[in-house]
Amino acid sequence: MHIKRFLGSYTQNKPGPLLICLAGIHGNEWAGVQALDLLLKMLEVEPITNPSFSFHGKILCLLGNLPALRSRMRFIDHDLNRLWDPSRLNGQFTIPEGLKETLQLKMLKGIIDKEIRQNGHRQIILLDLHTTTAAGGIFTLPTNQPESLRIAETMHAPVIKGVIEGLDGTCIRYYSEKYNDAVTGLVFEGGQHDDPLSVNRCIAAVINCMGTIGCVDLAHIENRHNQLLVEYSRGLPKVARLLYRHSILPGDQFQMKNGYKNFQPISQGEELAEDKLGLVHAQFDGMILMPLYQDQGEDGYFIVEPIQN
Image (spheres, rainbow, N blue to C red):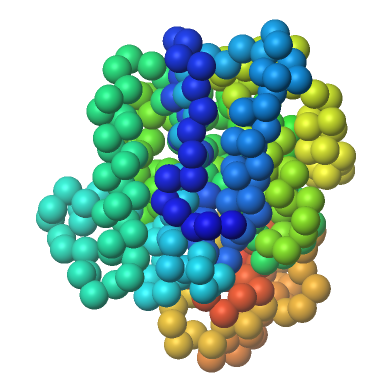
């Protein structure tokens, strides 16, 4: 498919919320990109196959890091989803001009800011689609906004609290904190990068979100979309909270031990990885999340604790 920033939009010009969907902010995560492309095609033909279909508001689908997507790399010079620092974006510090991602940030931010300014008084939802290097489960990452948590709890996937607040420079955190309750942000992680069903799960997540916020009537959402997410989440905690994030720096020589999957139980002291200082042991009992199995990235792994099964 042709890679362009503005993937497309859909509206029937009826009052309703603005749903901004973002995919490909990491260039090796193509499932969300394919999901949004297919979803826009589905929306165009839905009124033909279902004359009673009604869409309220607008959905806007955007792509993030275009050079990285073309190269199928997480990023070229710097992680685009770590550059959204309020101090830099508000002019107190300078975003390095030499980075490929600097231009991507400016262009993407310009589009989102314009949509927010022109939106009027409608509800605005910013949904960021991702996938992981490890298999083993899907999940949503809400902000600490009540509306974000409400939407996340309806998406038939584990809800992990505290991760967004624990990561600096993410797009979702920037907009949810800058605009407070005027913009509701959340992340959906649809599964492993190369799993074909990750595309379907991302489609299902967006459709569920559209139903929750009132873009579409819940009666028009086919049960197969819900069931796909329910089945893949079976046996996983409904809600968990972040206990620990293992951050890594260039030169740490971090290497995760083989075989870990999302939501795999771990014990305090368990050998999880190695780096230039030696073995890396689990800091807590809990479940491992997003173990790093790629060359790029600043997060080695997360440890979460189930709080609702």
